[in-house]
Image (cartoon, rainbow, N blue to C red; front, top):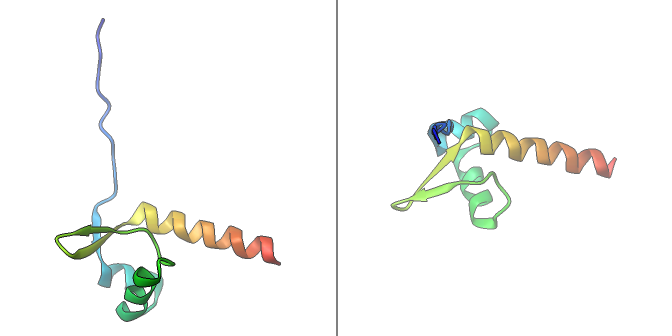
Length: 71
């Protein structure tokens, strides 16, 4: 049997300043969201928060769906 492995493609890890710029919020707002557990998913590496663009975009889609259900 010939098994082939398919590489998993994931977006690179982004710094919080890049995500804050992308979302058009301050880094302190992003930090508050992390503390409150309300912001986009992140990975903590040696005490530093990093984000995957895919996860940030999925979080935005989820927010859109939540707000659409309210209206």
